[in-house]
Image (cartoon, rainbow, N blue to C red; front, side, top):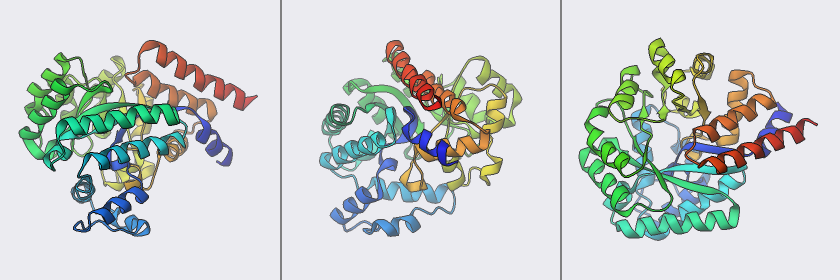
Length: 340
């Protein structure tokens, strides 16, 4: 696929499911680890590959939280955010909705206002310097319980940074039922935010139904188990509720055993609006370009098919109408120029 890889590298793209701390490059993670020597995270970028090898989803959460613990002041937050955009620009990513977990940083002593100012300053600088538009999804870390939900909703509603567009729920699904978070999603939705919880990655279709009915989800993070419920697949397809699919992530966390068995094929066959994303790219040894290559193999896509996949993400994004049209036109123009 040499030509396809080259095509993917230059294809203008949007990314909708990518985590803030989980996007920190090995260089930045190692630099932060060196600044905070009490951490168990390796200070050698090459050693991080072994450190980021996960036994299962629970082990992934343990490792992820150890990296979260490296972000201890507003300067760390700003550095991470700006560097993420720098890496995105190199992949031809034009727009990204970055999942941010304010509770984790605030609990570690970063004042809420300083946290918000740091990400907003990085957002403005990234757009000016790299042409990457960043928007935020403020995310409840489900493993931290209702206290974290209350704090996340408070920061989202009361501080409401300019770049904030959505409200999410991540972390483990097993033992963390979606309905308990309904009051917090109701508050966020009333404040004008979109609902984008994770659901059905490591649990069954009922978790996705709960996200739809209780949390009024407009997009579903992962949704891997949706294929086990034909009625759910039909519902997602009929109402154009997008799935944020992250193939390599699902393999790394053992949510799916083999890439060849990934349910993305059944999702597309059912007519579901599928977007492809990288989730926590350096931790999983991937990036968005790599995920498009994976999708090309799994779905047997040529250049036009990949362009259509890129336009799915534009359609599913929370960009306004003119901005969607502009990015979709850029994708079409790039593709037609490539195929001439």
